[in-house]
Length: 251
Image 1 (cartoon, rainbow, N blue to C red):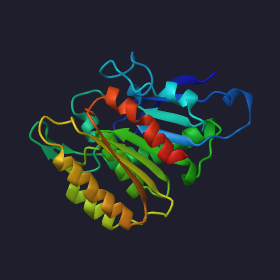
Image 2: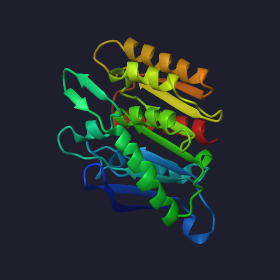
Image 3: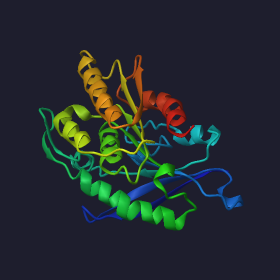
Image 4: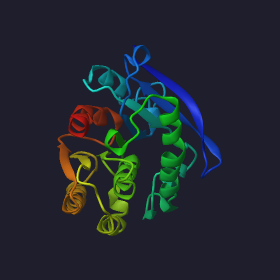
């Protein structure tokens, strides 16, 4: 049987702990097999409705139980205090009228993932630790962080699921980031956005994603664009996308 383990790890940038929601695939306890690893932001929203921030999860564990490739999933919970999630999940200083100015510490979060979380997982569980077996994913601000991770930390991650990424805050920074990057040829990046995520037109998000897709393709990455018809900015609609990006990243 698969299982979900929960434990806390020190998040050094804040001097606080963050909860890890770890999916262990069926068969793990009855073999010596090693497993690829998917790291995901907003770990509280992945598996169980009772853990989810808004009472609805992705139910990712149900999908993983049926997915032919067995993968360990590391869900990393964020802060739930004020705007701290926005700070933790922004690699840049960003601004929006509804939230004001945010001095992002997203690179410190990535340092935590690569220098603390990943070494812990690799030393305590039977993983394949090389980049070809390591992916990252998330939605909204977590989707923006996943794009940042695959660009800046391409030596660690070979695949990224950028689900409804909040890139509109930082297009200038991302263009510069991608321009300075060196992506390995096996890099895979999934981009998605929904037609009904905004009250107005989704044209700005369409332009932003297609622009950045072109940039990463020029650097050699393989991409997949998924424009979800009727898709909204919530867990219920992101759950529907899971089979598409899992198939693209791993199969």
